Length: 155
Image (cartoon, rainbow, N blue to C red; front, side, top):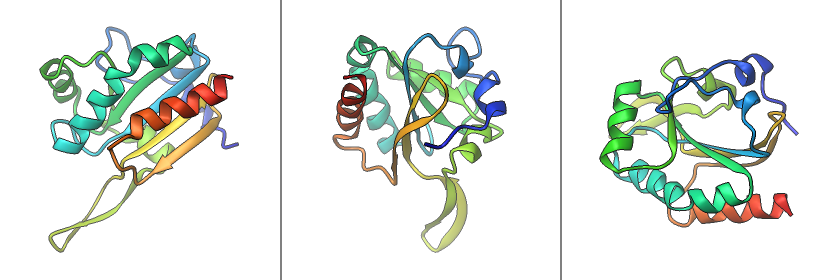
């Protein structure tokens, strides 16, 4: 198992919830972190809505769900409000979590190379240990697959 850097795991992260979130203080047994490139883009919207639609099922198995991108907090708040998302989003503007989970990679769009977030998802336990991971995620059916994985872990 990969242990998350304690500094990252134990620090507060700014998000759309009322208070900053600190993963090491969450009461849930499992935490899903899904990283997406940019708020308000088609794939990111579809993925965020899919996780939101399954939030009660995740909650039923003692699992918190957070979406993370490097977008500013105001953009995250607007994104959440626009689609009435029940999940909380984290504004990782300094890319602390993105680097800790190694989701920033070189991308190529229309011949232009740039660094960006590669859609990735992680399931962690309350100690910050990674129990499952998906990289280069395809959106369709992904949230359901993650839910089934967490159900299997929860027994």
